[in-house]
Image (tube, rainbow, N blue to C red):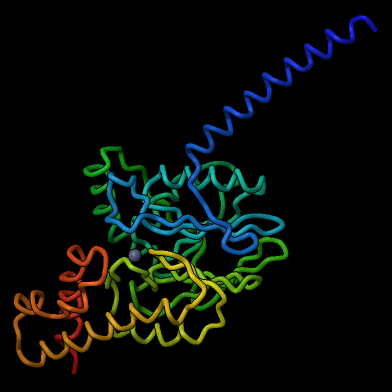
Length: 316
Ligand SMILES: [Zn+2]
């Protein structure tokens, strides 16, 4: 009996120490974990900066997210550096102890995929899932990406993480009482765009098939992209996570500015080609007004006109 208060005190002290330790760990986590919003039950999103991919933002410019089932977690894109991938992993660990069973890449651009490294290698590594044409696209760009990482970020570029499972047409991923529907699209933003749809909440991750505020970037086929937008409009969607820019619930309104830009780019470039305007002049003249409202227009608009011109030059 006499010892009891001392014991309680000692227990209390131990409890305090443990509490501080937990607090300390939580603080470290808070610092390193990406900030995420639960935009629908079990659907978490981190919105990247609307900025150029580079060391100034640690490559954190694309939207990334994850969906939590009863058995496991699926990640949708992993961010533009291994560090962003690690911070995404920390964010997941704060939400659930469940393992990550799938890492899905919407396409091969480095700002969406370099974080894969943080999920690879360990025992029980997840399946890496992407469009059937992604492996080839990534192989073609690999050296360019690794050079950019080494040069701009000043860190040795680890190996890129390739898909272990690819999707042609449609596929489903089962997370435990929760199904994701993956769809591989014909050439649009790239030749290997993949969307992810959570059936339970009707949430669509579009990858870069949809840009909000951030200027759309044509790296596939402009006519194909305009056609894909028509199909996207018909989907039954309650909320949307674009590749860049804020998520939202009004899909039609979110698609409208991008559709207007791409359609004008198509129309004006086609007219320039038909009129025999040389490409050097076309990149200065085509779509100057339609480019203005977009963030990063100075970085991407002329490149878009160049891509459109090359595509439309050989059109019948
Ligand atoms: Zn992209």
